[in-house]
Length: 109
Image 1 (cartoon, rainbow, N blue to C red):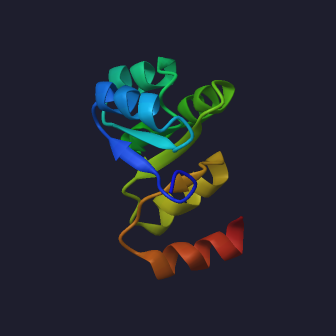
Image 2: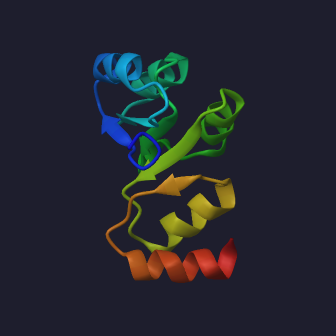
Image 3: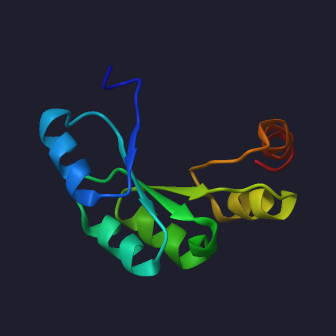
């Protein structure tokens, strides 16, 4: 199951506890502020930083990748947000418009 499930939480302590029991299960930290983003980058229990769309910028994507973490963004619903994510090299994202995202992914990535 550890290979097929990604756990997400906004509480880094919860992810740390899960990491002790399920070290191979990917853990995604949901963050809404730059301070929370910075804390998630420092946590060894976090594999994926799930950042609010407002935190999706070249510096944060690069910092996540430099820390060997994936960058995920939420929630990308407009064409411009999804295209920006593709251009920035965002690893994954949440959207309410899957068909639109798939078409843009096919066109631009």
